[in-house]
Image 1 (tube, rainbow, N blue to C red):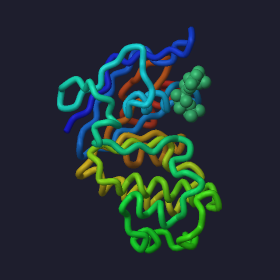
Image 2 (cartoon, rainbow, N blue to C red):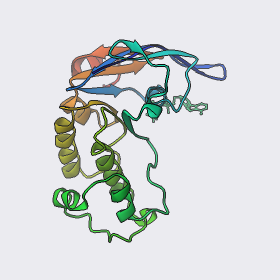
Image 3 (cartoon, rainbow, N blue to C red):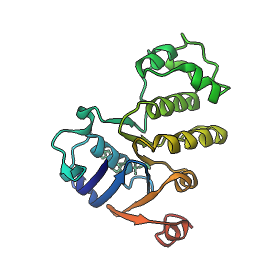
Length: 215
Ligand SMILES: Nc1ncnc2c1ncn2[C@@H]1O[C@H](COP(=O)(O)OP(=O)(O)OP(=O)(O)O)[C@@H](O)[C@H]1O
């Protein structure tokens, strides 16, 4: 499957956020999106998922314009930048909701020892992010959109998540953004930098320096 975002334009009141966006992603690849704070990464991922309406824009799957919002098609899973799981849910209910086996999770992430009946609200910030990222990655959707999946997560667990992402891309389109740019560079097959409302395809850390993203 191929996915394209084209000609996306987004304003908030009179403030122009996105104006010249083209992005191509496909099954078997990881597409990384980088950019400074406030450049519009979250907005772009929300437009893709369909929970933010742009002024203009075109999302194409296999070359065909999508009239339905992606989240309504059931093809996509989306990890929002902020909380995914409701605070009143228990850990057990979270695994059940996402039809995911907890044993596999705890085999990978040994220090996650929260009891099954523990409320999501009582997890640490990093435990919660780890759980949410893992559940979304295991959603078996054709398109997986991750907004800051590595935030607050210990480096050793980020490495495990990166391995999972590289396995999952075999059957899914994966699009992600994070400020942990080294991790994004490690796993991305295609990389876009958002700057001045536009997307630019880049290949290397050198280009990120030339574009003023890195010093
Ligand atoms: N609902 C909104 N109403 C008005 N302005 C908004 C709204 N949502 C986002 N913005 C503005 O749009 C711009 C882009 O925000 P967005 O969250 O997409 O950036 P980002 O690249 O994800 O930033 P960060 O890396 O800091 O998370 C910011 O200037 C933000 O203040």
